[in-house]
Length: 413
Length: 86
Ligand code: HEM
Ligand code: SF4
Image 1: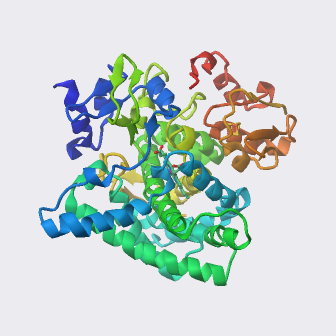
Image 2: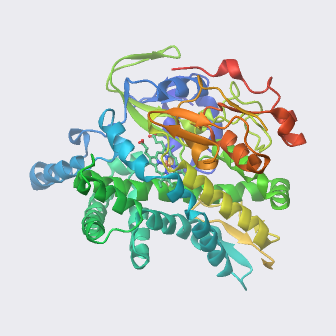
Image 3: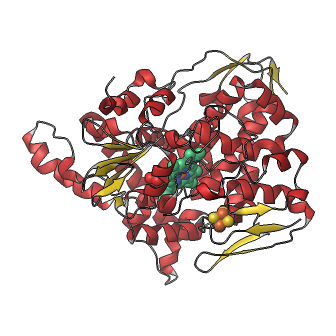
């Protein structure tokens, strides 16, 4: 097999359950050029140095690179207009400094320690309620029963979305998450579905933000919206909407995957499950190891702004650069026995939350959710056993995780 | 117990501040303040902070750790020299 098609293999759904052997082949070179002109970065050292390299840009692809529909009216009039709207809505994850830093600063001011840590009790209550609903059954569908409903409820709480609107948010989040996959951007139909969803959610957010201005509460959206009213520097309404949507999308499917991957990994390593059950204080290190071993986000794509010489390769200006986080996490040059799941290891500097200036904003919240979910599952599920291994996976190669995780149980305590 | 943060390594990610807010705080622009001698009750939160730090800049006095962790925190296993800087 030729090396310049290895990334196509990563994208191929047939390899979703176990992409790690392909990553191993990719790591023979720190940076490998693919036939389509993309450069895949697969070693820990190379990813790390590029995460801090100002010559890499996170800006989204320009509209001119977007696909054509074949319908001239759409191609020349409707879609460029929509693109104009879409490019106005560029969340901070797709921005470079200085705009990125300004927007991120506003978010961090509202992503306060108290606000995040106060969600603790709410997460515990949600997890218990969701598990309680499985009482009387002899199997749990982890994704549907717990991993999926939890994060969206938590984000809604954080932002200040009324509980009644949560089901609607759930549907939107699912649709938008697919938009982050490389294949979806090429597929015109998927892109259109994304634009429609985005329009719906943007309209909803616009109304919600107006409400928050009139009746502010102690939530992130009220905080972000009212900053300007108090005469402090603040983001404009368009950025406010994009930020709210970003928090929903970035915090949803990722957390779903962390919980599901976590339970899958524990069921594959029953000894670790038993140890966690006996000593819940092991959870923090177990979760860090999980973020290394089965991260929810496998890669992110950037663009080279100038020529970058790295690992014996020169990346030309304009080339897409794939930072393959999940491969760096398994680099034997960096971690001893990297394919072993070992929560006892102390040296776990992973790329689970990325790194550098785009390091995950929601990491502290994700850690809280995953810890409470996994510890409670271990405590309350009696004799859990996997129904199928490997489970079925969702389509995404970057946001990678099981679509369903059936677990046999002997009861709930 | 005693805590040391390698402030040359610290990149101001603030993960420690969420994990143990009474012992770590970022003030102004990315200057980390921390309690070098936190009380014993803070042990679990300090350990969380240490684990959450993306650059592993937090060091906790070994004598204060669980027996199992002392072995794991063996400095020869923490690869200080390998951390490459931008
Ligand atoms: C297990 C759960 C999560 C994982 C694995 C995860 C992972 C990541 C990763 C890898 C990035 C870096 C993207 C890049 O470098 O291009 C990122 C960025 C981001 N994440 Fe998370 N995330 C999680 C949960 C959350 C949550 C709960 C929130 C919000 C409440 C959130 C909000 C964000 C935001 C806003 C960014 C963009 C930051 C920036 O561009 O400066 N994430 N996340
Ligand atoms: S988590 Fe680490 S890098 Fe971040 S502020 Fe704390 S010590 Fe510094």
